[in-house]
Length: 492
Figure 1: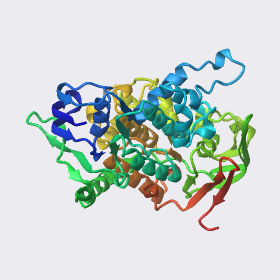
Figure 2 (figure 1 turned 60 degrees about the horizontal axis):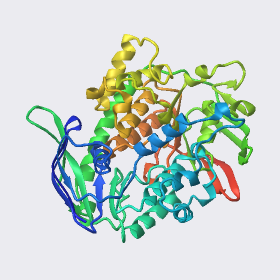
Figure 3 (figure 1 turned 120 degrees about the vertical axis):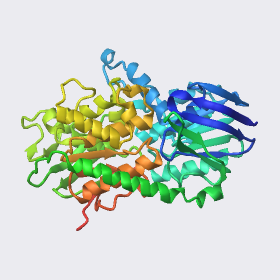
Figure 4 (figure 1 turned 180 degrees about the vertical axis):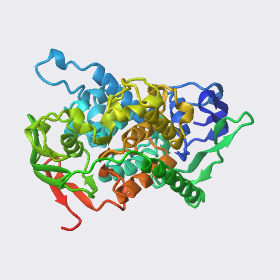
């Protein structure tokens, strides 16, 4: 099977491929440096979008496609079919087993696919009960269910814990014996050994002054690993981080609170089908930044939800926030005034189609969409943020019309724009290209170093460690025997 692409143009996105041939048995990596062109290429090859001009020949009949965008669409579909109002229990959506089965041509495939993607123990779990990493594995199982000849994976390791990252790497090597692979990633260390060629999009400006993203010359994996582009990209991201910090430092100064800033005493979350965690005693003082670590599905997001106030059991626990016991008369909005949040859950909830500028402005009001008149100062600051994010051209573009990575970048700006006292970051980098991931990482580390906000941070990737964070909450154990929550202060 040989795939040939020639004179291809995505006009509105400025994506150009002059000529690209993928020979049989070649496996390609597409490295996302500083644009979402790689994701657009995946959507194009999968048939999700059409090119403005050009030809694609040789595409196989069965193409598996896994992306954060597709994951978001399935979550939205599940939410639209929520029947909780007509049931005597919460509707958590379609089960893992049924979602995989609907893509299989034979019922006998289901068990093997669930085992292959480590979902057997979750087969009866509702889709909306899953963690981000568990959801990613469901998307992979569904893609494999159609027995693809070409498998396109956009950021395949996003949201996976370390053990599942390693398992996926091994699975991809195994699959490469029978399936052609195309892997789109912003992480230079995530291309498995079976990848034979690597390519990236180069930025340029045409005669009309429009920015273009043109597919560059192909490289072998060995050539890629010694390519000088990494050093150049790191330098560029550091420069942009400094510019972002200058903007943050111009913003309003947030109030300070007496210690503890946050405190949980013997916190416990339990559902009818099992205990999530109990006996959690966690005190967060001013000047402390924390990383929450643990495997997929252990309860990290649940713990953060207790603090944020989005979890239904937050009022049945002994929680102090900003000097006041939760439930002592404060409204959820008074709490959220002091908190910025970036998470997959928020990304899913942000389903209104307001403009990119309004998404940033909504951060001042903690709303999904913009329903209040911003001040001139707020409007000017939001436009400055668009410029720093290199998204000025998207000012009037609807949120839903943006690529997943662009959406995530806006939500990060939304969280930072008001310089919150507490900044909750649950896998914030999902969908970001290399430059923007390093930009946000560098900025978050400087925010922590200068104590401009207190960070509560979740990331599974070892290269996402922030040097300014010295305190940890670790979920230890496994799903079968249960998890124990260990609070580890730097001074302990």
